[in-house]
Length: 334
Image (tube, rainbow, N blue to C red; front, side):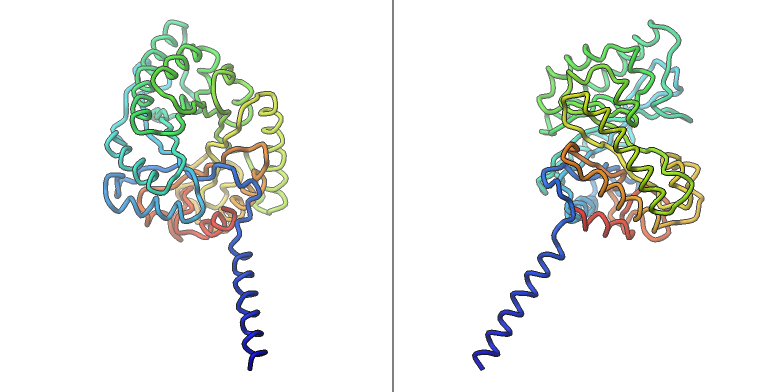
């Protein structure tokens, strides 16, 4: 009888140990910031109680960080006027940040530019005068967001995102100095892919190197083919970042759950009406999370996560992994 009790006790211990091993996160770089770019969903704004569930689910996957997205906008790529978008209000952001704080998440605020019929990378002006006028207006709005971020105790602030053509034309040092006076946390800029990292001139004034990372993974959706493309892109990024003595944050990485998305993972608009491909999204996120689990990568943020906990789902072609098999992939790593 005693022997039987001992055997069952030992078996119970083994089961517990195996369960612990099964739940151990796959990620090797345990100190890495890992999280999502969190967007307000029109059906569930951040100031609605239901939005809290979305952040709770995000944290339950093992995320320890979050990037909240706000917006500024201009009419055309050559418009000088920049205004704050009402798509997400300061009050709504304040609520979102409070939810993240309840889960002890590292919080970044990333104001992004919206350009009607275009994108931030196409913002361009014909003269130095027009560039100065635009940048003064941009600076005014971004400083207001930085003041807000400081008031809310935000950990990091993104001074610009994917402003590819602005890099050589505007006075980033002046803006960074102004931001240092109102925000005490970490400052970074989100360049567009590895070439954007090489082109941005003012990394020495910032606390981290960041980028949005959407290289083509090729036409084929076979794992070996996509893996080869990712390996090349990651090595290119490593070389670009190695020249800068700053932590590296992959501020955006992801893919729509849409057929054909591997070739141009940034083309979300043209993929809206494609067939759903949940397996592709799961495969690609698995490849990325494995490839970016490096000692020289200090943060990885998946695009995207919505304030509506019911977003995504089995029929959705959006980037979000919510309520899709990709959620389980992320949970295994984190």
